[in-house]
Image (cartoon, rainbow over all chains, first blue to last red; front, top):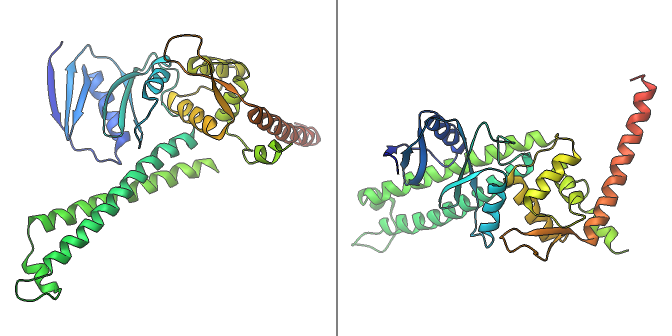
Length: 188
Length: 112
């Protein structure tokens, strides 16, 4: 096994194409992706070679995951790792028949639709959590009535975190919807 | 035939779907499908594995193709077209022929 290095990089869920480009650049510098875990990418030293990376997204557990991988393998794409719904593939640029795992717009749209579905579910759950959290914060020890002033005097790290999470998720949903709409423009 | 009404729901097909369907008149697995489609389209249509997987899942779910028995012990799934799938192809070819015939007529008129 070659030298290993860990790289810290923040890439959001709507930046999958940027991530693909960055991983490609790393491969040209001689670093191949080994795995990913919350903000840290683990790379392994390799001969510098131009590898194209593509990220697929599958929103549900696949009963035919091995058949799915076999299809990619047959087409020359190497399975690298997976992270929640994200599945990482790469292929030497000189070997590939197609530069992308999705060769028509409709199937690409389906990928982002799956992602959008999951993001929307998480956002909805967070909103419910947020509402119950803020309702709780609006109470005081002295009266059972909900009061906005209590909310601000009771403001804490958790409250701030909730706002940040909901904002990020909302932004992610918006960006993915934009992506889908841009792709759909190509269809008609 | 009751297929007709059901089949017309699927028209028009994307190029990828159309080529995958017509390559499955005999049982084939993923790689075989990719090769046949490339052959049929003379290298113009190359299917990415993501697109192929999505199309096969959808066609299978809709009943236009079906998994056929595996002769080989490896993990590859073989698919074959169903009667419904064949009806869809017939409709689609008819539609494409209509488009091509009218188009050719117009091109001849404008001296193309």
